[in-house]
Amino acid sequence: MSDLPGAIVLGVENAIGLTVVRELGQHGVPVHGVARDADAVGVASRYCSTWSPRLPGPISQWLPDLIAQTGARAVLAISEPDLLDLSSLPARIGDCHILTPRLAPLEKVLDKFRTLEIADTVGLLTPQTWQPRAGEDFAERAATMPYPLVAKWSNPPEVQPILEQAGLEWIKTDYIRTPQELAALLDRYAPIGRWPLIQQYCRGVGLGQMLYMQDGQATLRFQHRRLHEWPPEGGVSTYCRAEPAATHQAQMALSEKLLQALDWEGQAMVEYRYEPDSGRYWLMEVNGRFWGSLPLARYCGAHFAWEAYRRAVLGQTDPAPSARDDLRARYMVPETKRLARILLAPGRIGDPFFRRRPFADLTAYLLDFLDPRARYYVFSRADMRPWLRDMGQIFRKAVRRERR
Image (cartoon, rainbow, N blue to C red):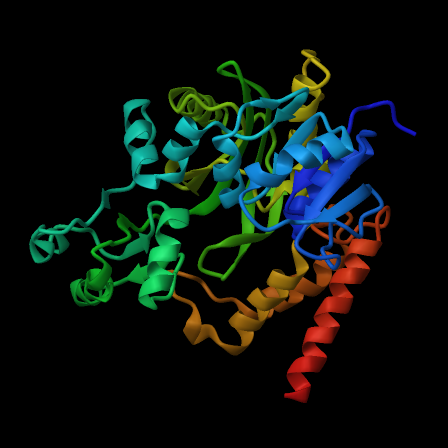
């Protein structure tokens, strides 16, 4: 039985929440998971001591009672909506630390355009970006943009309900090749008077620099390179590798400087498109929540959830141990979808510069199972039940589809 105070983790339905549960549990923290139903993968983990179903209504209505019932000394959350709800609560409820960002810095990070403006002031390289607004001469502005372009929403949590109410699909990323395609995209959203950011397309590979900030200083750092994403043209990291700490050092210093300018406290990932040939780092965004590739950081020993817990709850100030940089991690369900898209539906890949290598990708997909450096987002020999539950759910969904 652990002597450490317990922690509540909100949102244990996905691989990110599962990783937070595993990380804290492996350090001896009793974890109480909050999930929408009992089938959540995080609930199946051996490290999830207890769990409860998520109650309806705002978090502020039920979280204080849950803290009192469990005796938890820390609350961590996964999703941006939960972070927003928690950001307006006190930083502590009794003896329990709410280990999530405060509202003012969180709003800066969720607004991609504002983040880019602040990044410009601290010397980061940012892509040319236009935020269309009602009353502008769209045709004149479209003529000045460097094609191809990428369209993405500045503040997804804010705009998603507006799009849903208008019957418009939320598209995370659109690729635009011509002024005519841009005009069509702008017309699509004219009924709601809101438009996504229109941004210069940046070549390169995805590079994520993760930092834990306390009192304006980074106490933990880690970085990875994205090898594969779903969808293939950009999205969730499905295969990534750790980058040695000795690389990208000047950029890591700029990432820390950016988080200082954002008044950020806690974990964050600064995301770039990195061009190895030119050495340029294009800032994409700051991810202010636990990120999708968190399993790789955990396997390498960069424990961001534990860093938050040990500093806030235990008052520890000693440096975090150095992380490994020789591992890779695979997110197998979307990684398999990626391969299927490349092999079977290449016409649906939106990125005009995506290089399709079907034979090489199929071969690598199979051989990577034999790579001793490979780890997995959900599968773990030390904690098999989440993977078994995940496989069971996939099988049942497949059976239901066949019966329709």
